Image (cartoon, rainbow, N blue to C red; front, side, top):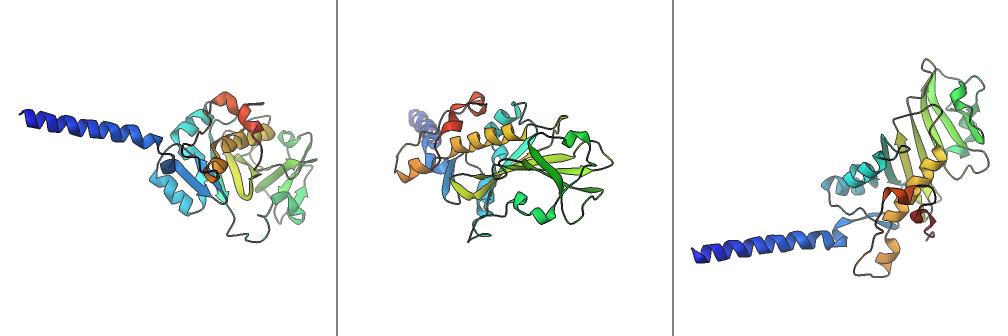
Length: 238
């Protein structure tokens, strides 16, 4: 009996040690997209499969989804990163505002699209279809980000919107936030792009990996860190 109790205790100690060690091994929680390495702090077969397809949905990670959904600007959103390296081995991914031939300003759009400082119009081969995508981008900084909103003229409000930007340290990575809770007036696309970029930069541990750091120190990320002026937003580009 004593031997059995001793053996069981040894098993429990081994399991406890294994549980204690597994979260501290950063290599198990790292993902590679393009030239960057991100620490999502979790392991998941779903994330592994997504990485194989050169795509990762950040909001498939529970703690990220919980944090973003508690932010009034990011509630009911899906945030993902897509690696376009293979599609565009030479040059950079197609940038929607560059395709001016498919952009058609339309003064008949409803007042919800009257946005100061933005270019707004249909994107597509038809100048004013009944249904289509509304393309929105900053007039004075069209490379910063753009938004697309699915719109049906029979409905006064967009069905959904999505904000996209190229990730500065690797311009082949396109970060997109799909917004399913569209507000009136329209969501603050500039601030959404800024907060999501702050989040992505906080998860980026590329330089630490390249430096051979044995223990990665991902910033302890709190919701306030991705708000305006948050410390993660000012991290330098690589």
